Length: 117
Image 1 (cartoon, rainbow, N blue to C red):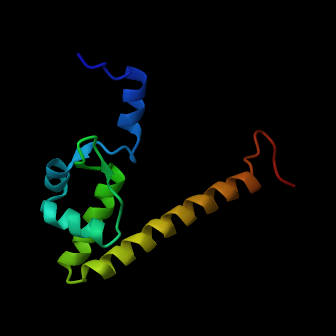
Image 2 (cartoon, rainbow, N blue to C red; image 1 turned 180 degrees about the vertical axis):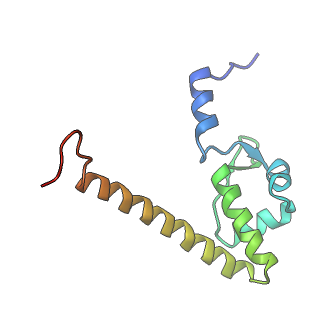
């Protein structure tokens, strides 16, 4: 009998958007594409899929969000390679905005009970 997963690690995996918890069929169904679309998105560099011990592709929620956005762009008539570039830039921009927010909070901590002069 195989060892059961540690419940504490299981909870963190459920909360982790980068955890590769979706098999190809479930991933494709979740965002309304074919497995071939996911393979072509990977080949175009949208993401690198994790692999199971048996070699099967596994997708994270982050992968699925990127693939879904690429699907939207492809549906609008944009080529896959251009859609991948757009999505990659959108992800980078979101990360930069998040970093700016963090740095702003560090530079200007809230004034608890004090008034500015």
